[in-house]
Length: 302
Image (tube, rainbow, N blue to C red):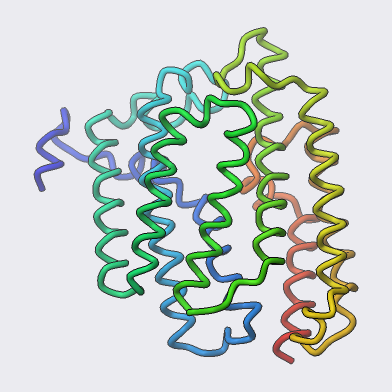
């Protein structure tokens, strides 16, 4: 491989490279499956397989972006109390190796999309990568724009699932995805603000224009809007008619409990630095997600 020749060492550090790709973050790409799930077509094997392929493509694209971010942010990450352990910031992976990993992920994502997915998914993935490059180079340093753009990334995942299965996308799923993603991103940004408050200097340039009071108010506001929007979704005539069930509102208890728990972890325990880590460790939130999924499986498929 030509990439291997660029490396300063005679051996590619496979385990640090794998950490650089952050496979634990691939769970975010489950959003690609949402349109298929709510279209009541999850039991169509062919459609499920092609949608899973789209999720893999976006996982590879996301890993490419992680490589790019870690390369560009290596100096700032080295000053961060936890991000300093990232492979490039710590020196476990060289910058040339990081660029190679990024290129491999992009090429693999494009190849899979070209061969196995509809053409419009390819254009969406290219737009996703282009927006991520803009985010990494500039937009993440612009306050408010940074959190809004990250929320858009989640909506693009949902759009990819809809395009893959040729499924009409409901405005409800777009609104709820954007609001939930914005809520989670604000919680993550709060972690940066806390570090700024402790150290007196922003670890992230974009965090300089935030303070704790603003983030806490924004979190509360977005959480409230998210809950209200979800309740409106559950009692919508369109939704209840399409799903043939008038008891969808019962699922709101899982959403309310999950959001309250995440607020508790964020505002009381200061543990909002990584939403995926929270999801992987907090049993209460896991129970809320599992209960919500089981309720909808019963409503839609049983």
